[in-house]
Image (cartoon, rainbow, N blue to C red; front, side, top):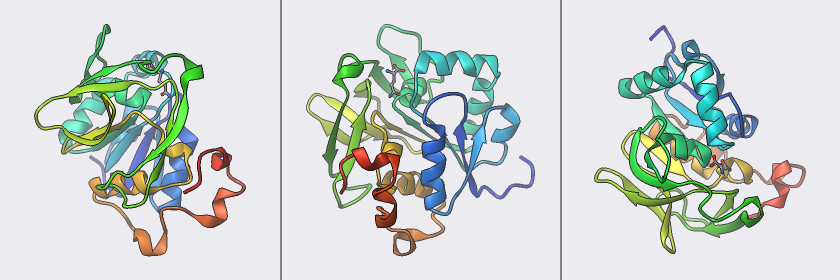
Length: 221
Ligand code: GLN
């Protein structure tokens, strides 16, 4: 594993919301590492597979030969969080398609709300993550239709599950990295055994950051 001390969280750096996740980790005082090659996975406490386009990400994972290394590190104890396309890559079953990594026992359906034009923003309270409502950004999002034993629902909306987790894996069909809130990143960091600042030093929403950030279009909580 090398001599890293499991203090960093990687962000799969092939396509999608890489900078946005690294930015949120930095706000929590966590070392975020862009990961492109298998060697960069060594010694990470966790890995975020960002949103983007799952077909493209799956193809690039093959090109960079990193899928097997992600699975190996996951078995070794590295936690993984998949957002949107990342959640699709992690699912054990994808409706009508072959699964990719299959690291969490759930069934997911791609593009389940319709086209890009059917993207939307809403908000919800997810008690395990924060007592305050969290902004939720859905971009041509999938729906989690079913979860297996050993997987817990974190957020259900209408007929689908929007966030779920097992002991080792977390999936969200929305994009916390595109909002002013770092609550979900803190939740994942804690799952990885990290949270150097804690809510007293770094609140879930940084008031100085909202007005100038590219996240200003998301609903401000
Ligand atoms: N629609 C994309 C897919 O199926 C996911 C979109 C996203 O990550 N925002 O891969």
